[in-house]
Image 1 (cartoon, rainbow, N blue to C red):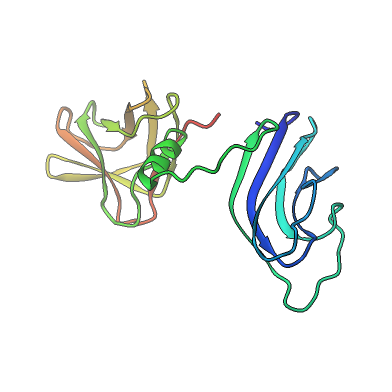
Image 2: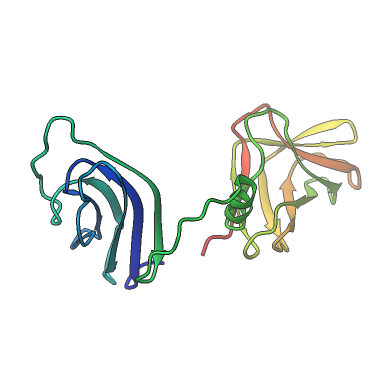
Length: 214
């Protein structure tokens, strides 16, 4: 999303070396903060602005003691660099660093990527019914996402229905919206119309991943 666009990186930096700076590379060009730190050990806000190449294959941000061309420089015993509030944004203006509550940051992140809980065995995912002897339809809800997501599965899962447990050999998604979808779970020998619950198997690492990235 940054390719061919102006960008700005900013950070609060403390250092005793005047070559403490922000360096950015797109593998062909080095961009550096217009000046290094004043070197007095106090906090100073540094910024670097540039335009990322339209053919860039990487975007690397580095805060370190180096020259403006990323070459080695002289340091004195005891020199250091500390930094915080690093911010990357599109445009040529550094805006204030925002400290948001964890819950708000999580909500924003989950608009792009969300997964079912893992770390526990037999974790509940959703419920529905057996549409046939080989297909269980499961309704799954999730936090509101940016757009209807795509599905990736990892690990093994089970459908529990009518007192029986069925191994799931495949899961696909149907009619996804930003908050709800139907999961088509492939099973074998199920009783049609039984109420069904989808869970991960005796596999604490199993989960479903929903992706709504740009």
